Every structure is written in C-alpha cells, then in structure tokens.
Image 1 (cartoon, protein in one colour):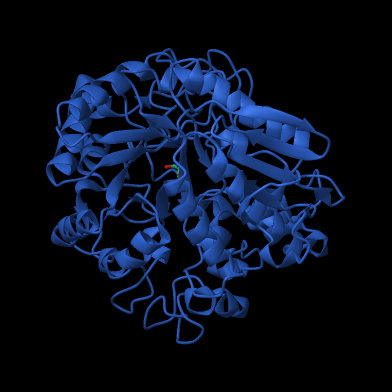
Image 2: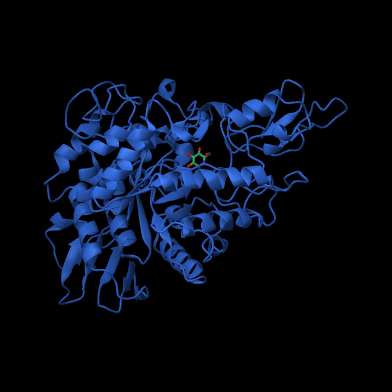
Length: 528
Ligand code: NOJ
C-alpha cells in the first residue's frame, strides 16, 4: 500500500504556499498511522515547473522550493525509521528545456552529437519550414518545436519538455547512473513516468491514427511512439541496476497501455509493478467493473505478477467526483463544460468509500492518492486565472486540466491554508475543505479517514494465504470470496441486498446505515 504524495500540495513547512520535503517529514507519523507501507513522491527535482516538475532540469538536485538534497536524505532516513519506504519519481522520456543537455543541444550545430541526445530533425518542405511529421503533443498542438537555426525538436508533452533519444547509448548510461544516485541515497524504488513512451520509430513516419491522447491507452499496434518493443531493452537495463542493490528496490510503470500489453512490462526482468489504469477508468457499473478487474488479474497473472490498483492520481479527476457524475459524462471535459448541476457529490462519496473497500480487498498492490482518505472531491470550479497545468494553455483553453485534483490538503479546520502551511496556498482551497480536514475527521468513526484507517489495518491483518479469488454470481453484486472465507461485496444495484445469514461483518463502507443485515446501494462490505 503506497501513498502518493503530490509534494507541492501535501504540507508546506516554510509558509511560501508550496509543499516541500520538510513538510512531508512533519507528517510521516500521519502516514504511518494511516497504515501505508510507503510513499511515492512526485518529482522534486530542480525544474522550471512548467509541468509541475515533470520537466526536470537536474535529476540529481532538488528544487529550492521543495528543499535540499540533505532534506531528501533526511526524509528517506526518517521514513525508514517510521517503517515507510520511499519511491522517487523518475522522468526518463523527456527533460526540461533548461536541462544542461538541451541547452547544449540548442547551441550546437546540426549533426553535433549534443543534438543526438534528443530527437532533433530537419523539417519538411524546401526550407524545412514544416514540421518533420504529423505527430501531436498530448498536451495539444504539434509535437514539434522549431529551433532558431531552423531544425525541429520533438516534445510529446509541453514544448519545454524535449523528448530524449533513447536509442542513444549516452542517454541509456545516464539514466542508469541517475538510478544509482538515488538508490545510493537510500531510495526504495521508482515510479517511472511515461514508461511506455521511450522508444520511438526512428524513421519518424506520420501517425496513422491520431486518437492517442494523454492518459488514455492507445490500443494501436506498432504506434510510432507508444508502447514500442525497444522500450523493454531500457527497462531491463534498469532492472539489472536495481537487482544489484541488496535492499530490494522496486519500480512501478506508468504505462497507459491496453490491458493485454501490461504483462510485457511486468515480466520477471522488467518492472515489479504496473498501474492497472483500465480499472481506474471503469465506470461505476457492475459488468464493466467486474470485467476490468478480472482482466487486470488475468493479464498480470499471465506472467506470474499481480495488478497494482489505483483509483486516483494527480492526472485524473478525483474518483469521488467521477463517481458522482451521470453515466457517459467525460469528467475531463465536464470540468469546464458541465453541466455542473449533474454532479451528485453525496453519491460520489458513497461510491468512493465502497470503491476503496473493493480495491483493498483485491489481490495485488494498492496506490492511494493523497486526500482520497479524506474523501476530497475534485475542485472543479477553480477560477481559470489560477490554473497552472500547461494543458489549459496548450489546449487553447478547451480543457481545464489537472489542477482540480492538486489543491493543497486540509489538515485543520482553520488557519490561512487549513494547516497546509502558514501562508496562502499555491492553489486556493474551497471553504468546504475545512469540514473534510484531518482534524475534523480524525477520531470520528463515520469519517472517510477512519474508514481508510480501519480498512488498511484490517487488510494488513487479513493477509490472504492465496491470491486466488472466486467470483460470486449474485444479481446486482460485485462479489468475490477467498478460500480463507474472506468475502467482499459491492452493491451496484438500486436496491438494498440482504447479506448471507450468519455473516460476520468485518467492515462496511456505510457504518451508520442502521440496517446491519442489508447492504445499501453503492456500498461495500467485508465479511467472513
Ligand atoms: C505523466 C505524469 O503523471 C504527468 O503529470 C505528466 O504531465 C506527464 N507524464 C508528462 O511527464
């Protein structure tokens, strides 16, 4: 069970409005008491922060707003003292345009080896004025930007994030060295950004199918830049580095690929884990949820692995809000386009509480996104002048972007930023966050925070003796049983459903229902 810390928004120790490493250190006891095994920290490197730190200027240094390398060492050490592991975010697909390599590339003449670390090409047309091909950036617009001497560089994300040329041995060596740098500092592993994007078709053909979007599996075979076979060569190099360390470090892939491609990433000499994004993307609907859950289990199982479940992260609309939207509404476009009165926040929260019991009952590992344990919703009504996500500008103000799930955490019911720090936070918190703060929820047995604490503690206690689950065919119920008698039911129907006579209820997502023998719609129960 890993807790994702979006560092800018977790805890601010300096009062500058931005979360930082020492803020995380001050809250380690909270994470330990929540019951997680470790934390994954979003990028903390030196960066111009054009994409929240996924634009790295120096992979071996910390952004001054987040702290220092000594702070990072201190965090790793103290986390270990609390029994928590620390996973660092590795960003290998692209650097920042302020990275020393790109500064060199920009200043070098065409054909200089410094340019070969990136994808820098001559454009089309008599004067090379047209981009080399039709590839699009997942943030919007062309994936090519022109240099002052007329050549073009590739950026699958923002134009400040030039893509590295992974066919270049120097790039491969550099990243193995970066891994060693953090492992030597005590890091326990890596979450690898855009894990499915490293290899590129070096003949740079036009994209035939332009349906590939950010954070959506492509499902396209032999795509010129997603999910290419050569990517696995680089993964194996990293795995060899990790395996040479005695403290058993791990790596987890952020690979938005079709479920039947996920096993390729978790073969024994590749990643230890890969997020089951197909499950994250499921609508709140019995057949879909069951199909996607079973598919993730079968696909990971085909290579002897288990899925890594997650419901939210810093890139998607928080699931409390997703589950409160009517069927068929795309949450990403809904943020801007509405209709906003279609949202039923109570329904969303009820389902989110059920969903976490489902997820925690499944075999595999689990990633929680900060704030979901408080039932935080997406802050969909952030005013457009505070938006920071490059998606907003790059989409020509058509897509609001990901800021609404990145609003700083409320720790207390009052204070300038509800306990996040001593000054105004970098993104404004809605007034409603006060009532969802840790201070308000802690100790209240009906709160979402206490539900998470109980569920995590129980999950630890009820370690399964087998990873096999047996599906139960009960109308309206997503249910399964383990051979040790542990069962999880989620009611996805519109009616209350009677629990089996004599069941010993361990935990339920609606503790206050007052009808212990019944399972209300959109709620879940663990029983034996
Ligand atoms: C995926 C990250 O999670 C996202 O936040 C980022 O914008 C892109 N990769 C590009 O690095």
